[in-house]
Image 1 (cartoon, one colour):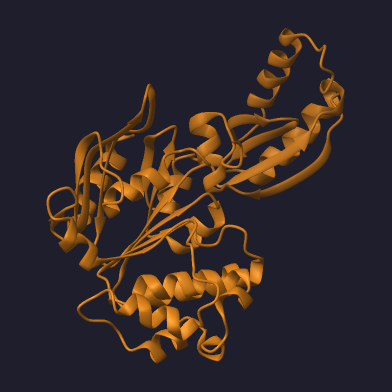
Image 2 (cartoon, rainbow, N blue to C red):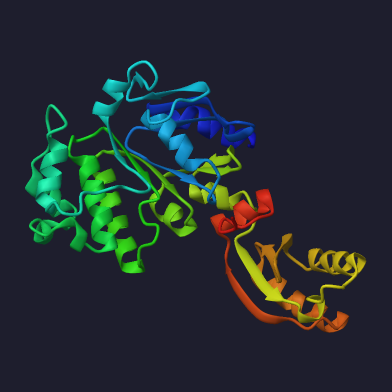
Length: 331
């Protein structure tokens, strides 16, 4: 990480951390699932763990939740050590797991009452169901709920003890767009009530919209940590131009010819970087009009025919590709 990112991660602008992870390591045989992960989460923020499947997000969260013991390092949550004061940690947190097993034959209100009974004190059930948009379903059996309703119920169960910190592990995976947006609204309302939320996701749009800061992970390591806006600005590019070059899509094309084309693309006016994902070339630029005009002229002069040309703003996906050479969606 850059010095500025390290400073943001370490000091957090003077905000008091409610979570501190220091040097977390988790091994499974010779495989290192989490490799020396450190960060702080500030009180009242939505902190995102963003990365592809297998990046180590869930394992990192489970070590902070006290569900998995780290091989090295420590996690302090709400002032309590997850290895030495686990009971106090569990009283202070609420957890929505990536896959929550629910009792399908219970009614919604029954399962919420059951979970509430696990704690010395709990929030009133009816307002909780209203907040989760489940009041009309309170007498329905769990097996009759839709995917989005089941996810909202899982979050309701994580909130019954009025936790200080809420862990949400990929809460919108598999949901349709409307259900995802509904959950986003609920998560933002929780933040407005002063809750601290740790959210894992592999959806870049979700992370960009919801998170105050994002910890970008890959292969068990933290590769960047900052606000979404600063991460995107680290590309030094506001826009991206994408296109295909059909004549270069032959599998037998010599490497020298590909390198020559990349050199041509890098010479286009305003281009600050060039990436290629499968058959799509991406030109990053902070001078979109100049880059488009010059690229069209250069392509004509060089006899390069392009297809599927489009422009867009730079995204967190671009940051990840720039740092790793791979897409967030690649396995």
